[in-house]
Amino acid sequence: MDISRIFENNRQWVSEKLSVNEQYFENLSKGQSPEVLYIGCSDSRVTAEDMMGAQPGDVFVHRNIANMVSNLDLSAMSVLEYAVKFLKVKHVVVCGHYYCGGVKAAMESNDLGVLNPWLRNIRDVFRMHRDELVAIEDEEKKYKRLVELNVQEQCINVLKAAVVQLAVRKRDLSVHGWVFDIRSGKLIDLDIDFDQALEGIREIYRLE
Image (tube, rainbow, N blue to C red; front, top):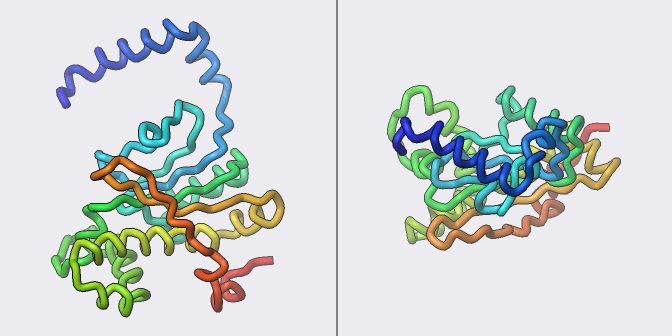
């Protein structure tokens, strides 16, 4: 992208919005009440609003490498707390994508410096599901399955959070795991059975 074109593109975008609704930006400035928190990957090919057909104000978005939800990541935890407790979103979505560079890097043994601690979270997902993944001989299918399992584990991390547990009990907040297929452009709902995924560990993380 030509960096010198950005402000011109912005002026055109503003003009287009105002041509449809003269109060568009004035209305945006009054506040936000999104119903969805989207936690996705920073990958430049995956744009949350575009693939969902969402408009500014519809979705609260947090993105990082490989759509991780770590309790040690103050940024992710702050976003989750703010979206659930103060914006009172109705849905939390964790969305991964096939052909994710972060997941691919975690499958390899290269030393990537400061990225190592971050990628270790994904390697931990591999360890937890090692038997299933090692049994997959096709490398691409294994890669795609790790993407899906990583989404599942990050959804579980969302459900571990106290603010989420409270919202699930008090106002039926729901958590969803999705994958974006870059090759087809389609969103895939993984239909994760969280009762099954949490079986045997729910009492460990449950907070009163």
